[in-house]
Image (cartoon, rainbow, N blue to C red; front, top):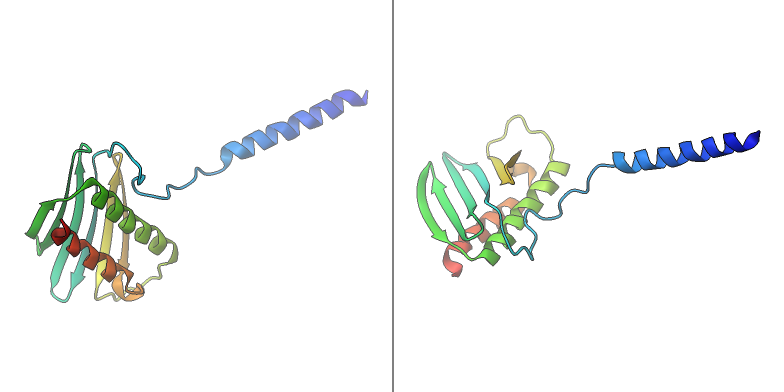
Amino acid sequence: MRKPHLFLGKLSLLSLLVLSACATPAKKDDNFISPDATAVPTNSISINYALRQNVYLFELNSQGGREFDAKSAVNEKVIEKRKISKEHYISFANRIYDFAEKYKDSKSADSDCRSPFKIRMEKNGQVSEVEGCRTNDTGELGKIIREGEILFYAQ
């Protein structure tokens, strides 16, 4: 008489374990693009930020995994645009992505921000944005922007 109850108890425990395994959230990507990716899908990642009276844009684009470019603009006027290598593209896109993910987890609200920024990441048709204030940052965004400017002269 006790065997059916024991069997049902084990079955319900097993069902609970299976359901909880299915309910765990999917692991977040560690990178925007895998460093060893052989094919890079069409995607883009950009940093838009204000400094004094000007609005700056730094943008990386991948077109079909064959062409990669970086663009710098001030007040919507393109200052520099050039092709970059796949390796530089992947490395720098991942650097921006890492910063955005860390900032998203640790940002604090600032209603009176004088130096706002927005990072826009488009990957596989999905767009995500991170907004913040450079005064809440430890200087990391400024380092990333300077590294991005070096991309124009590194090749």
